[in-house]
Image 1 (cartoon, helix red, strand yellow):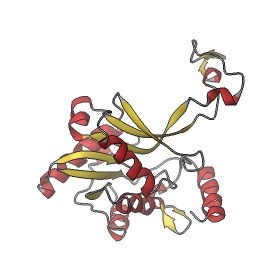
Image 2 (cartoon, helix red, strand yellow):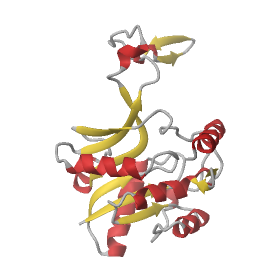
Image 3 (cartoon, one colour):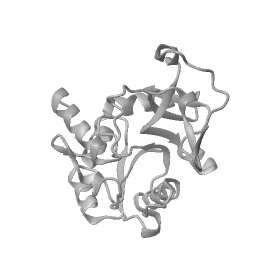
Image 4 (cartoon, helix red, strand yellow):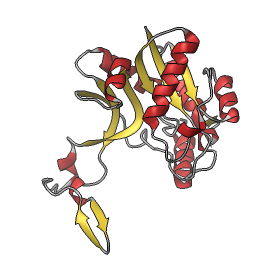
Length: 230
């Protein structure tokens, strides 16, 4: 049974043009994700799901497999990620003649996730007391200060949250940072979800959790990579 690292990397991106091929330091975001998977020592196969030939070429150059291209209907801005994952696993199993047991999803937009994080997540999953594992980081803002915009007024989004007077009171809170997901293939097939309770976790720092959504994030990531040699 196979542990598959799947890296979704479609060609289109509105926030950052050609995002998955952009460089942080001397490596593309895609290369960083592939390196994290390959260097973890716990991944059997690394597959990139893309609709883009240039991304496919970069993936192969970095040592990943691209045995198929993602259908256009699963690669639009409106497409959910779960159907693309299911399609990728089905195509991989047919092409490779292997059954996927464990899925590790690594989005390229987390440039400072590394092999240690991937390894820790898989070790946590294999402990056997959770159905999925996600990477998390500290919560930066008080949850009771989240508001929803309703016409011209704001409404509290979380109405029953206990107020946190100090940031130190938030030490038990965290958020998903989208860097690492681990879930059994059977569980994913059953639920159609990556995050299934009970949920295990691995912790990452705020700096490690930088996520590339817009050009400013790339500027910040480049500064971090240069200053800390990442």
